[in-house]
Length: 274
Image 1: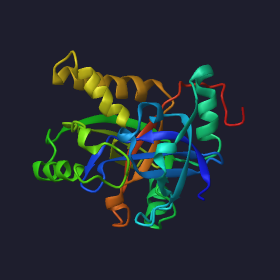
Image 2: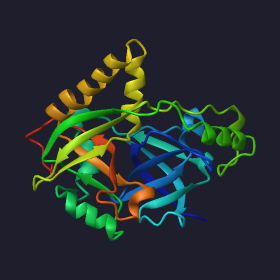
Image 3: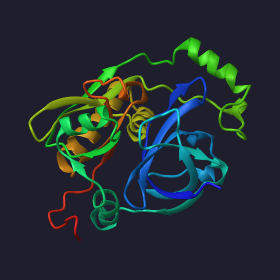
C-alpha cells in the first residue's frame, strides 16, 4: 500500500488541454518537511465539490513517482477519489503562519542563473524566487480559442474516458481559453532581467471576474492594477517558479514560468525565526 502524504497546496496553474487527460492542471505544494512536490497530472476540475482543495490548504493522498516525468518533484496522485481535505491556513497576523510554512523551511533564491543551472542539471524544477525588483507587467493578446482540431479530438476522447477512472467525462465542459498572456518583467540580485509568464489559475480567474461587468480593455487594466500597482508595488513579493515539461530537458535559456505569486504584506517586524 502506498503511503499517504500530507501536502500544503501552494500552486494551481490555469488548465490547458490534453488529448490524454482532457485537461491538465499543475498542482504543487510543500510536504510537512518543507520540500516541494508536484502533482502532475492532477484532475482538479473532475473532483467532487467537497474534494476541491484551496490554495494554502493541507490535503492528504497517496502518490507515486511519475516515471514519465523525470523532473525530481513530479508525482502522480493515486486514488484521487479518496483525497482528504484538512485545515486551511489563513492570513491572520500578516500571513505569519503561511510565511512560516512556505518560507522558513525552503531556500529563497535571488539569483536567476542559480535556479536555471539547477533546472539544467535536473537538481530541481520548482523554486521560490525573490526578485530584487518587478519592473513591469506585460499583457500579450493571443488566439482566444483552443485549437479546433485538438479540441475535437479531446471531446471525442471524453466518450472513451481517460486516465482518471470514475469521472463523468461526457458531462465535462472544457474551460475557456485565456485570450491573453500575462507576464512580469523582473530583475534578480545581479541586475539580470527576465520576462516570465504568469500561469497561476488565480490571474486567469481574476481576468474572467473582471470581464463580467466590463469590456476587455477595462478588465485588463483591472488585472494590471491588481498585479502591478497593488501586489508588485506594495507587497512583499515572492514568486513560485516551475519549469515546463516541454522545456525542462531542452536546456532552454530560462525554462521557468511563474506558477504562483506569494504576496504577504510588508512587515519589518517579521523574521524567519519568529
